[in-house]
Image 1: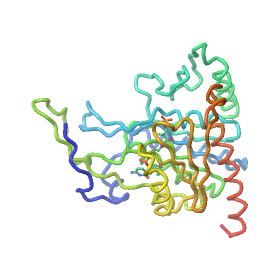
Image 2 (image 1 turned 30 degrees about the vertical axis):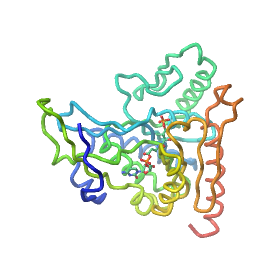
Image 3 (image 1 turned 90 degrees about the horizontal axis):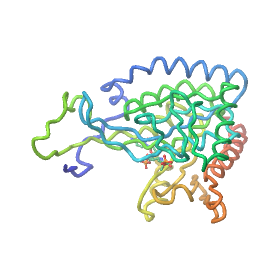
Image 4 (image 1 turned 60 degrees about the vertical axis):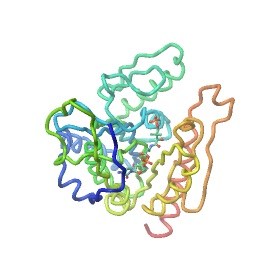
Length: 313
Ligand code: PMT
């Protein structure tokens, strides 16, 4: 299989993308659930966090047999949603193939039944915390779980959920940990049936339009948006994260390297850089870095709301 050089095809704009692609069959039902959830918590004066996690697949055939996946075990989103200082959560996560959670910890948290848990005894105390958290979510109805498979499912869902949540204005945080595919094959260029294996395969892929731009400027202009930047080359990480902040104009980029993402990240804002790192002792105790990331973000979100009220946001 040969991937042609990237950068050769024209990038379509986000509106054209939505006009030329079809959402998942569950989108309308998901929108109804999100509206109910958002209205209820908005009326109660609660803040809501949208957490996205998992990989987005790119099908190679319309009747899909093969697809390309983006790396993500879904752990970042799953562990982040567990921490108690998040009040209400809409969590959209990538589909878990065969019902087996790709994240670690010996837990089966199927998106269809987050309350059915199989626990490996090694992780018993950690899982007790997660279970209690789920029970609290369930009792208070403060967790809404939605899922996606393909990058197209994800983008339609993201647009719908953010549009509905825009009523919350600054009282919403958008925590975008999903690994969004950068390349795809447009539906109209895709093979209808299974590609036959009678030779090699050369793929030409188009670039997925960048959705952070319309999200920041049109979908949720008043929201607190935290995106993640994943790189494998340390020399690129901070510069590329800064570039994303400049380009999209949102509040925070969390920069992480594939190999060290569970131990250290850098929170980057327009005028600061703040490293969050687990100590050796914390690593030995199996502490999760999200237990440090989330309180820091919640603190910054409150500060931002305070400052925004002075600037008349
Ligand atoms: O799930 P884990 O195994 O725990 O791993 C967590 C993680 C490494 C996946 C997570 O921490 C992370 O970094 N997620 C973002 C991965 C990613 O998509 O990075 P990127 O550099 O390709 O994109 C940067 C940002 O641009 C993302 O916030 C993405 O939402 C946005 N983007 C990307 C593509 C696209 N077409 N439009 C976008 O808006």
